[in-house]
Image (cartoon, rainbow, N blue to C red; front, side, top):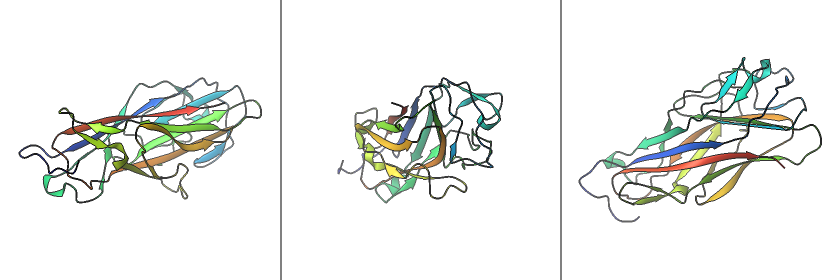
Length: 221
């Protein structure tokens, strides 16, 4: 990856598809009233998990008003195009095709698009339990059509949201090639954050469109 870019050709475009694997089996109970939610205690009940990364589905309103989450097969993308003159010149922000700005908990406008991806979820159980775990699994590299690669650990994120300080999900960098823990979810809570992704852009790479998919998973004991 230290070789100069291949001339001629289009500048590299970096695509990271944010996938989602989540279990959603909810008969929703109302949570305590709150004007906005980052980590909110919810009513105990039948064991349930919900995870939303980007676009999600709720019917009957948001969660705090009794809305019921459902499965959504949408895979949102974050992308950046590196101008030829800027290859290797330092960090560039990525943008998303997710239109989600409002909290699925209470509809508070929480994220800014196209800069941030909305991430939210809940873990509910009727009794004592160890915490649920939110993980992300990325491949070792992003790959273009010619088989050239970029390490996935060149993609990082800054976590936040309007009024979310300190951030719920910590900021970090993908390790690539393995699952990594992002957040430990206390039983009977709803959590959410907005993630701004960035490409490090510290190396010369061949022209092309490089892609890779990240899967986010919420699991409970």
